[in-house]
Length: 252
Ligand code: 13P
Image (cartoon, rainbow, N blue to C red):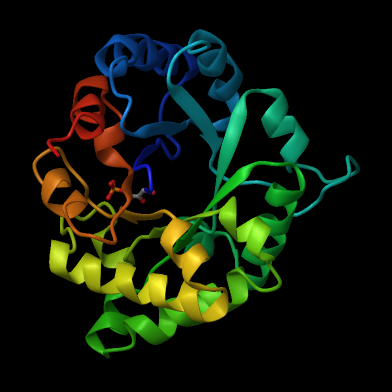
């Protein structure tokens, strides 16, 4: 019913040559994976080259961020949605915790970026997740609920149907400390209930909710076996073709 998505976020890694080498190695390893959608988010300078190399394959591309602006103009350093589509993106990651914590992307900014992405027909992958301090204080649902309220404010049903949610607990990102499948499932269920309350059951049932945070080939199957986990947003293990292919081809 919900087709799983395995998404790789390369963050600020790989020069263009390394990106091409990775995609070239990856293509044949995932060529038969038809039960999952494959999305890769390279750094901006590599997107066009790798998307051209992957043309005709089952690999889709995302940007790691998008401008809040929708009209071309004097916005030094910004990249807007039609530019991302122009180089081959179909998706865009919005509100990753690294952008929230290091680059001032508040949920209000995330909301503007969501609208910008949807305006251009890009599928936004909106990230939410609590810090360790917030979890230790038992506030993970409050925090994620608030992030959803603000980040998805004003979205229509039709816009939500084109959007993807990623739950990435900050304490699990790049730490090797994965949320247990039960911990992740609990939060995914919470997010789906939020979608049901804010929209309706149909939206809640249709929306893919990805888990991110130290997903590796040896834990992906357990995570994916949970009923509300519809895919993975992967950092470290997406950088090598072999490990990313193992994630794509996880045992169902
Ligand atoms: P890691 O898989 O390296 O923990 O990163 C997760 C992440 O931030 C994906 O967006």
